[in-house]
Image: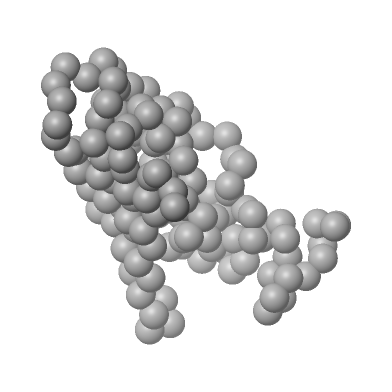
Length: 134
């Protein structure tokens, strides 16, 4: 399959996968001292770029997780999320990519990432991905 082969509705395979393998800053973690609680992190100023049009997407990313042995370090998470600012990636891919990277960083008991994206063309998008995956 070539990079230029069109998928449905004129999108290429390259556009469809845009941003899923880009190098991003590492998310650090620190040893958890407690058990049986949930963490909720909100990033209300998330931005990325549509890989087809180049137009910006704005939204709120909410990360919820139940720590096991590690907790997410917030400064590194902030720099990680800011790295999406100029990246071409679909909203669905951004949310799933964030979940995968959060799980890799802290190996939580369970986690979810929800992206609530601002309306474009009259449509508002909300995407949720969960770990463990069904």
